[in-house]
Length: 177
Image 1 (spheres, rainbow, N blue to C red):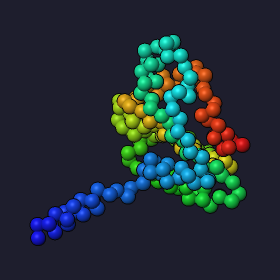
Image 2 (cartoon, one colour; image 1 turned 90 degrees about the vertical axis):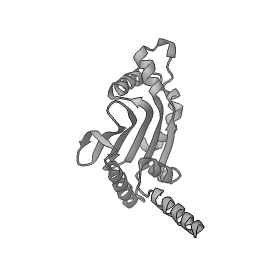
Image 3 (cartoon, one colour; image 1 turned 90 degrees about the horizontal axis):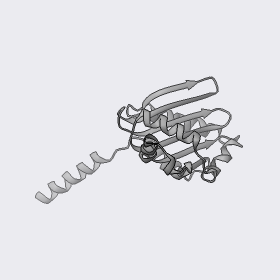
């Protein structure tokens, strides 16, 4: 009897611990091999900067940045219905309270938003989401450790000054064309 109770307890815990909630990470994994999507991971080496010439703030910003995950849906004549379904899925995921929206831009045919996961002082993930009814949409996850808005601003300045390694971005050219 004790063994049966232990098995029931184990199965109950297993069922409770299984979370069917959709997250961006799960969405990326589920769609990374889908032919309608372009998926890539971008490392900090894309910036191609001379670390010796960086200020202390720039070095700290670069150290806080782990990687970027990009998932882009390329719209074409044969996948318009799927585009609407996938866009609705991303919209639903980003409505979760864990994704705190910083800003949102929208016009009739296009839109963009910036959200984050974590607290104001310790951001784990920035999410940039842009969609355009003629091209498709892209979701960019900027992952790091202890990022904050000042770190992100410094990172953006660093990106502007860097010699970006375009080879890492080649798969995205399909989306633009």
